[in-house]
Amino acid sequence: MTLSRREFLAGNAVAAAAAAAQVAPGAQGATETPLPLSFDPKDPELKYDLLVAGGTVIDPGQRLHARRDVAIKNGQIAAVVESIPKARAAQVIDATGNLVTPGLVDLHCHYYHQVSRIGLPADEMMGLTATTTGVDAGDAGYSSFSGFRHHVIGQSRTRLFAFIHISAIGLTGDPLKVGEMLNIDYADVDSCARAVAENRDVCLGVKVRLSKNVVGQNGIEPLRRAIRAAQIAGPWARVMCHIGNAPVPLAEVLETMRPGDIVTHAYSNAGETNAIVAGGKLLPQALEARRRGVVFDVGHGGGSFDFTIAEPALAQGLAPDTISSDVHSASIQSPGKPLLPWVLSKFLSLGIPLDAVIAKATIEPARIIGRVPGLGTLQVGAPADVAVFRLVEGPVTFVDTNKHERRGTQYLEPIKTIRQGRPFGFPFPDPFTFT
Ligand SMILES: [Zn+2]
Image (tube, rainbow, N blue to C red):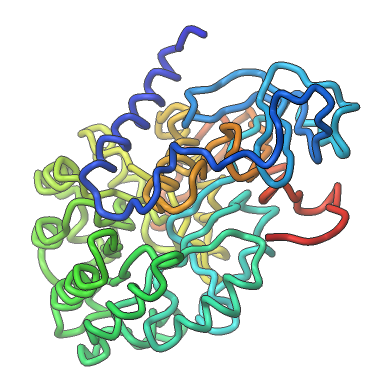
């Protein structure tokens, strides 16, 4: 097919991410290499478990934007072709008139429910978020990560990964208003590194929050310790650094971060000072950090996304690499509504094309995770994680976390989510098991 300008732009974004991935730590397995197939794709009698029929497939990892049927077998994508007879599938989901994408991959969320004060149960969120893969952003420190691994990851249908906090106690979210890095002794580098290294199958690296109210008099030291812990854990380990009202000039934070490390809350204006845009001008250190391979992530949350920062940043060349929600039990109640499809819709209103927006919440974060072949795509052999959206056309108002309003013309509404071939809700899988 001939690529439209929109698709060409989306492809460029993917190519840029691939180039960045070559210099970045973090990749443990090639996302592009599909799993061995658990079925014979050439068998004309092959009976599929599930068919998602009639939708418009947007799969930026394959530069695909076209009307396609998607067939699933044994938890894998089995076929993505123009038409598949419904009789060949045990169950059919009619996606006519809707968009079909890889299940969303959220690089920044809070899913340590019952332990973290702000943690939400990932599976309960499915109808609102279409998120089949979530990365917990430091709810657990080394003292509590084992519980996340065994009681949350092991019990969730959602595919979960995590950053382990440099603070032993993990992050202390509102309304527990005592910053987790007020006492620097909680940042035990060797203990954090050990927890990260021992859990490298599910842990992507180290989380740190660099805000005045979190670190007190400790300045940039928590970030330095987070980087040291990641270095000890292994060359694949990344640091995810939360910015917003940082205790030192933001330029210094950006210069300290390594290729492959992640700036989250990139468009924060928390404290209304020390943002990546100052006096209308993007910090040169932000573009320099991007050039070195530092990843810029949205992490919208309840206080970390401001249109008056995002607009000039995008205009001056700093679009996000990844779009994440920072959804948690406080932010989800806020007027900005940081549910991932809603956050994606805000970036549509900011002028990023639909295919590129989808890429930034599927293939691009999947490459950063770098542990599951095919994740974030609908290529044959990939895990059968699928989202179905209605693209609602019409006037819509978006609000940021500082109460600025912007008008948009469309938004994504989640309709159906499938994880490893098993739909959430109707049609219920039978037998009801999950991997
Ligand atoms: Zn967060």
